[in-house]
Length: 220
Image 1 (cartoon, helix red, strand yellow):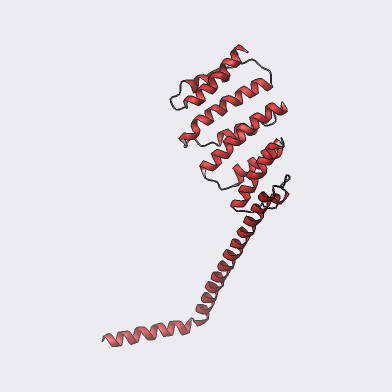
Image 2: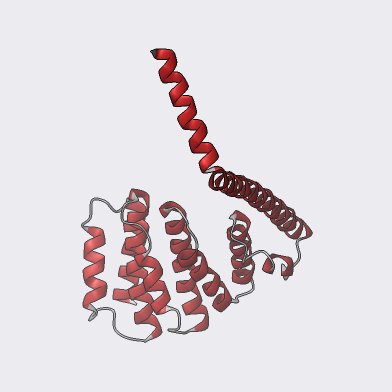
């Protein structure tokens, strides 16, 4: 009985295969094609990353003042695109080309799939840099971008809470100084100062820096 069932099952499978042979062959061909295609994609992706790696380190080692070679890497969708943008930002900040640095900061923060920690770090760096740029160029151009960058510093990262609060305060101060308005009559500045000074979450070093700025603004 069991042998008859086995024979019957085998015949059913055989009939199914023979009856659907063309369809089965097509399905197998598609799977093989996709598998080979995926292997080729991985191969070329690895080769592209290797090439980007070589180009990046060659450009850095050559210490090219213009870092022109890095421009060819910033549109690649890999880690060396991020590293190239960071290196270009550093160089352009040194050359006081803050407008281009701001463009690269923007691309990194909003166009890259960065972890919250890295995004917060870059956003904080961008904010400090552009606050300084606002003073150096005596301009209000960067204020909106600074505000956006500060908002992109994650509230979930304890280590960045103090930094975010300091930057919020510094942006208010920068607006007051550039617009030549009165600190004593600015409720935003005074409220932010009190918020920072009364917060148990803000680090003592940040409080001390903010206090010095507050006293300078009051008695200057």
